[in-house]
Amino acid sequence: MSNPVHFQARGRTVVGCTLLVIALGASATACSADDDNPLSAAPYDAAGQISFNGPTDAGKKADPDKPLEVVAEGADGRITDVTAVDAAGRYVAGELSADGARWHSTSPLAAGASYTVRVSTEDGDGAPGRKVLTFETGLPSTKKTLDVSFGPEAGAYGVGQPVTAELSRPVRDRAQRAIVERALKVDSTPAVEGAWHWVDDKKLHYRPKDYWPAHATVQVRSTLDGIKIGDRMWGGTAKPLKITTDDRVVAVTDAAAHTLTVFQDGREVREIPVTTGKPGFETRNGVKVVLGKEPFVRMRSSTVGIAEGSSESYDLPVYFATRVTWSGEYVHAAPWSVGSQGMANVSHGCVGMSTANAEWFFGAVQEGDLVEVVNSGGETMEPFGNGFGDWNLDWAKWRAGSALTGATGNAPNTQEAARLRPTAV
Image (cartoon, rainbow, N blue to C red; front, side, top):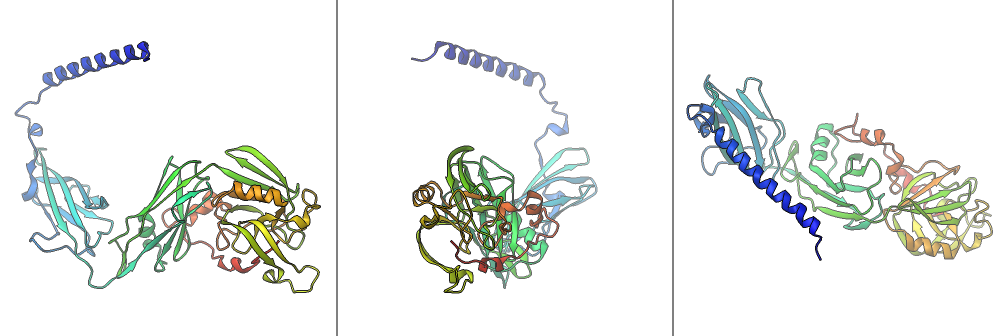
């Protein structure tokens, strides 16, 4: 049964709105315009007051290499505003001179696009004029296409998952990088502050200032198609991407306390006794992102440069392995070291736990969840090249890798790190 108080409140609101409309109507009638006021007249056709450098003959197309220009003709009028947008909804940035005599585009036009240009003017008496111009741009005679591939694959991830963009061609020039980066759009719900970071000439990563919100929707798209980037290089197509995030899951491994504590949305759900890397094989400190889960992995010491037959050699079947680096660092079952778990660090770099705990952890995490290691004697996880160490750069350093906000737009190349320690237990 409906609440009568609720209905009464809504009735009062409707009456109030009705009275407000009546009052506004009376006010509007009292303030009707003076027919002699030139500002109250409908905008005149400004065709004779402006000129622009686009094609005027049917069938002709504008050169996308040339900027768009609108000029006021005569001494008794000026341009007050210009808006140029293509059929895909991409606006063209531009500058209007202080005297209103000239407007020109400051961002490149797209090739093979249809544009609508709305020009506002006023004459010497201040009366407004309007003119709508339309034109199409042609295709360059020769061009190289820059395509973009977004990652990861569409689906659900943990809150630490960065977005990636792979370019089909290298882009080294800072101004060209800015054109590319400006066209790569990332929108999240809820909205968060984020930025792109150039990992190298062909790869960018995007992450928020902090982790993604739990249960967020992240949509990624490119508006680069048809946009000129450089000499004979034009933007190509890109398939849009949509991912979502699940609960905020963070596993904190304290190498000194020999524990791994799992937090879900800020609440501690389980503390597990573990062993981490022993001296000479210390586990990397810092934040890592879960890259995948492998029910079974065969781990050999030869992959980390340990000679067969030495006291450190091993060849072991490993179960419930959660990968956090490409070089072979996992959180996994280590039944051979149960006696040391919670008490000492005896592994070759991985985080080891009992089979039962490893099976639970394997089922509790997914790609994009976070594994943070503290109080280890190891070096800090590298930002790039060995998984997703993106979160180990503070926000200022991250933004420094952007062509739009950073000092250089360049990032250190750490691809070599991926070959340092391929598989360890």
